[in-house]
Amino acid sequence: MNNKTTRRERFEKVAARRTQAVLNLFESLANCSNKSNYEYTDADVRKMFSAIERKIKNTKASFGNAINRKEKNKFKF
Image 1 (cartoon, helix red, strand yellow):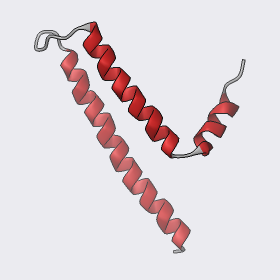
Image 2 (image 1 turned 135 degrees about the vertical axis):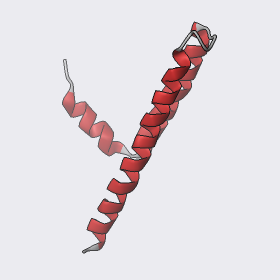
Image 3 (image 1 turned 60 degrees about the horizontal axis):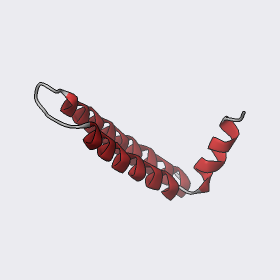
């Protein structure tokens, strides 16, 4: 097994596990939307999702220009 394959396999294993953890946390967060159990305002929800969207944007940027190049090629008017 060459070094590139090993690094790729490591990425797939770690990234899959971490992505699933994030998805599970989103499911947990969605449980907070139950108004029978929690009280919140629209401002609270906007503030939460603003922080989440900012973190997603920063995380996406950390992967470099490869993502940006692919996105530009996928959608045009």
